[in-house]
Length: 551
View 1 (cartoon, rainbow, N blue to C red):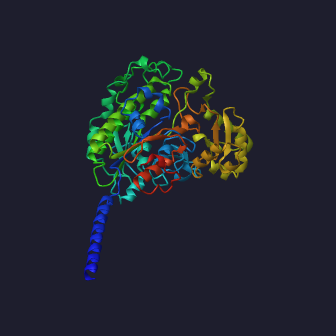
View 2 (view 1 turned 180 degrees about the vertical axis):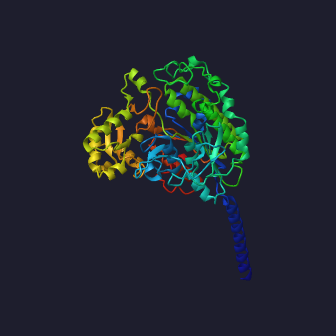
View 3 (view 1 turned 120 degrees about the vertical axis):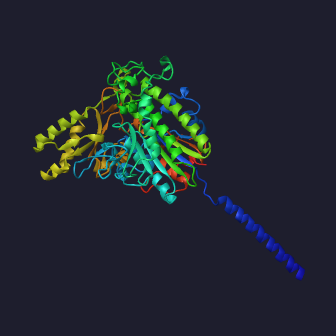
């Protein structure tokens, strides 16, 4: 009997010991939550979704093709609001929210209570760091919600480093969020990368060293010629197409080669309108990784990079230009080099990257008309003048409409209140006037969009884009192919697929290989990144994580 009890105790002790050892092994394996060393967010300003495939045959294996062939592409990602502009796009990608909630209602927007024009990142309480110009008086304070980069900082008790970089202030500041370690943008006035006192009191030594090399001047002295023989650019209209393309100041025609070394004349801002602006941005991104030791710590770091030159070049030359085609071929080459750098620095499977766009762009209207496709330029300034004349004749008050920015009617609410005008009657008069304009499909009272006789898809986008404090009172929806802008080049801002269908590709740690054709939205990006990192989604997020992307 004693022997039986002893054997039972011995067996129980052994089982307990083995169980304890197994538990220790499991605990050891799961003690550290698996996360990538670094997340890199790439936003290509004005990149239409079809640019992934328009130039696919000429892309290298290591850039866009690598992302598509190794990563996961969401082929039907749409922007769920209007207007489709840079500041809103960057804010939405990183917050998972929309203007109705995050408050960035345009690149510029009108404060409805005062009629004051507000730039999306302007902040009079801060000063420039690295410059004496007004370009540094910027911060993320106008953004009303948190970003996924903020949530990463919160989740790691602010041990994660977050840095934003872009030629455009709004492209660097808004993605980096409120709690970022730093954001840097380019100042045309001194040809240097700068920041603001919101983040720091002095530029880090590595940024000063980078600026001391005069990178913009170095690139512009190289001139801009096509990467390949110009007769191989079969996806573009003839190089000399002045009807569709804008030219550089000081040149006779929009043609290659572009002698930037001669045109430069100390104006560093010219680099924005060349592919070299993207190259310089990625150079600074590499310098940030090296100097700030991003991805080298015990927690995940985040580098938010926006590539702005694609937007400047697109606006000037339009989607059917050799200049845009060459820009994407060069960007592809730069991305391949950047990914190779990340492979060597962090290890190929130790970082995650996503690439998307803040908006797309329309074809040039004259180009479409010449190919028998309906299109045109809507002269918003002329419409505003006639609209104000109609209202003045009826109500005897001048300047009732402040502007038609963002395809919205912004009223002079102070004058309306002072003159005791009936706001509802004004709106009705404006809507009736606008609906008689041949280029306008719909003019919608923002506060009564639910009852408007418009497609549900437009209704949703108008609601999402409407911020009562910062958006106009009436939303103008133009007919497809029409926009407010110049005769050459292009612009964006509408609901149409050319503006609202954007690329979304993930690659690297935690990402499956595959593709998805079901509808996804720009608002889903932050939620997906949050799920990847096992952190809380931003506090204004309305998006849904795209589960198919994640391992």
